[in-house]
Image (cartoon, rainbow, N blue to C red; front, side):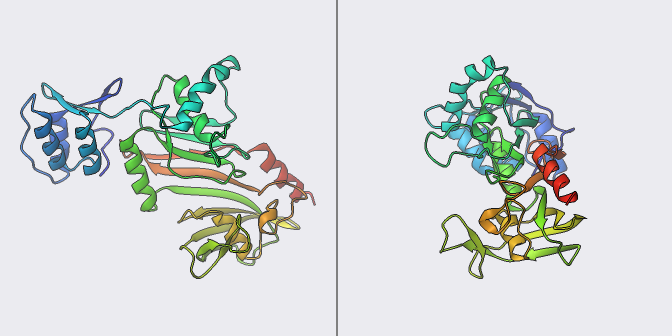
Length: 331
């Protein structure tokens, strides 16, 4: 269940989230739960039981907070230790972000990854093509995860942001991050329930016969090529929707929406249709115009993990994608 952003305000004091017990109770009752009021200053054990009875927070999260002393009451206020700082010893991206912060400040504090949105709960970073989301080998620098940590630290935040989904290294576009464990639990659940909308644009070779359609074809590993994936009956379910936006002499601009998030899904499905992505040499595309796949994330839509407010973030078109469109349109 997601909070109503108007019904349940909170205050933050460093690591602690402070809520009114009366407002929590009122909100639970509007949601069909009718626990008794809790006495002011109750012991953390009673508070844990009461929070579970409210049904407003994941049971796993409430119990974990209790186990580390992260639940308490001050008068009639409920305090939850929600905004935990990062641990450089356990989180490599956080450590690298800390290490790189002085150099980033000296260089003006800018990153090639743009921040589209950020608050106490979540972060949306616009990943450039060529930047991996996370390290593919220990100690790898220059990842989006590191940039996300550095962005948070520059803004005085100490929470390690955790990515909720990923993009291929050479795919540009928005990537969603959770800034704390509660947000991560809720956003992970939204991904499982296909409630995170992801819209993409791609330039493909040729012109599809149908102006719109759906590719519903399972994807598995290609046993003949370690880096490739392929449509395979024994693979994982994968569904991609598409529509043709513009047709050129030798290529088309298409828009795509994902129901699932398999590795290389768009690249595999468009190759399966006989229209590989421009620049995608791994899946049969020509790299004459572009040296990597002509694919970018346009938009991401999700419910805010605290307020439930509908969030839609759009990424600007990268210059390389606009140039690829222009060159194909001029052929």
